[in-house]
Image (cartoon, rainbow, N blue to C red; front, side, top):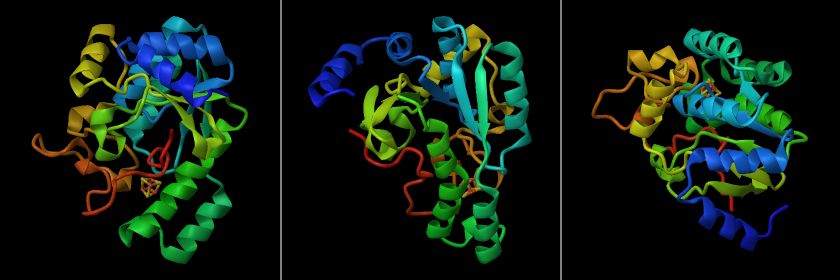
Length: 239
Ligand code: SF4
């Protein structure tokens, strides 16, 4: 869809631009075949709020792994009330979940990194494939400072893992402080888990609050010492 040269020039153009400009470009070029992947984290809500300013009915999808926090479900209700969105919720294939938990146990994720990733694969990555089916672009709330695996993400990428579609990361260069400044200034709904000490939000059994001195991602799969702390939705190389 975009050559490497085109991609490089676009990234050069947008690197110093505001996230809204990246979103405007994405909507103009791809709507309606562009959607926000909303994991109910602060960054996603910032983007959703911005999207509501550049398009009448943003397309949004949420992957419900079946193990989300009640606070995350409450937030879904809140955003449905506040924003005019075309929301789709994707669940994992029940047969795949049944096979996995009957073979390895209901809490298989605690047994090994491999089994934890197998759970993420079935409950997150495969539903993502369905969510992206027919899309030409998707939008994420990824930021470079979130994790060492994300330090080199670009605002516009070609997502080879998902069929070569475009992946937009409009907040790539934003800091945690900028995210919350936007939320507070614009009265954006947010996940109440942040008020309880969470800094990154995933599934109930795999996420815990962090201490002020801990890395924000320390609360994700906290029992893993040497893993990349990624679920597979984003950690693969993209150009
Ligand atoms: S975060 Fe935990 S419960 Fe959620 S899909 Fe991954 S391993 Fe499974």
